[in-house]
Image 1 (cartoon, rainbow, N blue to C red):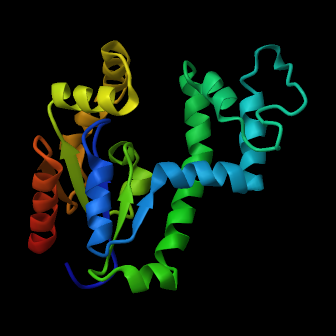
Image 2 (image 1 turned 90 degrees about the horizontal axis):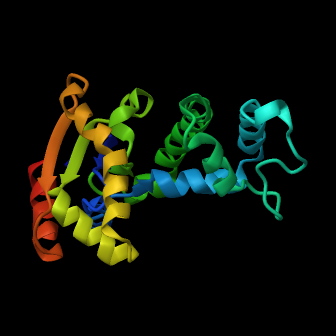
Length: 218
């Protein structure tokens, strides 16, 4: 990989192994932006974002009875559990939340990508964004040059997540089903976007070799 600074999106469903792929890419010199972790960090540090979230979510409180300290914990930070309880079964609330949070994350990614530290580390002229939802979000896809979709059979993914999270099969299956809409996006990739599927059905050593092959070929 060479040329101008590009963005490679690494995505896939729960248990697919996308985080392991990103760790291998990081070892090879690719700066990795973990969208989920960075979003949580913004929740804790961006007071303007927190204010906008609280104001917008107050509209979805039944009866408009918004308590003091709404959506904040004892330290004045976002209470993510309370936020989840509002958006979990309310598609309108989730859409409003995403319309606020996603542009903030994209701005954070853009700032991160152009820092000298990231540029110095990007030995292949490419940075990585790890995100489970990126295929569904045109806002993020607009800044992506390539997509690496990490995949594995449902049974394999279930076993991995049960072992990793000590979870029951029905819990893992429910999480996989909630993400299933991702797969419907595979045929809707924007024209010109390099799309690659990496099957992760074997050992971590085999996956590492596949990642190395992907780097060498792209």
